[in-house]
Amino acid sequence: MPSSGRATLVIRLPDRVRRRAKLLALPVAAAIVVPATIARQLSGFCTGAVIATIVLVPVFFYVYRARIIVTPTEIGKAGLLGRVRTRSRAELDSVARATLPPPPRGDGRPVHNVFLLDRSGQRVMRFTSSPYAPGDLDRVVDELGLPVSTLPGIVTAKQLHERYPKILPWAERRPFVAGLTLIAATFVIIAVVVTAAGGGRHGP
Image (cartoon, rainbow, N blue to C red; front, side, top):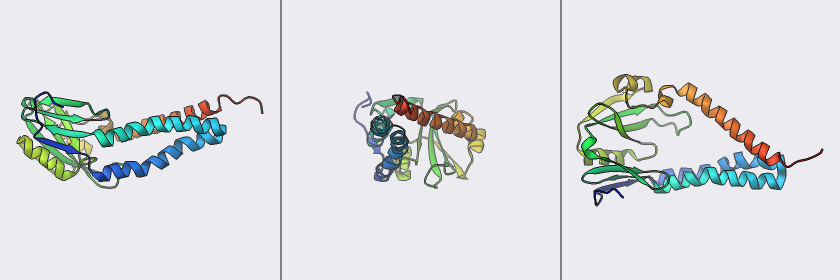
């Protein structure tokens, strides 16, 4: 918990996010386990199952532990391990809100973003409607009571970067390059799984 005492507001991930994680668990596990099983049968299945567990367990830890916590003097958010990362509310100067287009692998809905900024315009924290519910983000903004600037409509990452040059990470400003990097990393992981599963095979 934050060091400043009792929380005045705690926001957790909505049930829809937890249901989605459960629905995606099976196809993700299959994508890892099936190639390994084909390559090395029982030992491949075991190897793939272990890797699938390593991949999926952190996801479930996140969806059940993630939360936003607001106290009279701090704001914090908990992620994968449940550890709360806090910042003093005295650092915060304003809130920027913007809706970005749907991500390529999302559910097709635009993503609303809430950026907490310091006096220099640097991002202090960021919350989004994926995974948090939009109404819950409104509650956080209301609780903080800071000046709010909202960009109208749906804006691109480039447009948002032009207005607020210090709040978006590189991957969002260069999505094509970031996507190629992710695809390459995925192929490397699959190759490692298949190689590990077939490493003990000898002879014809």
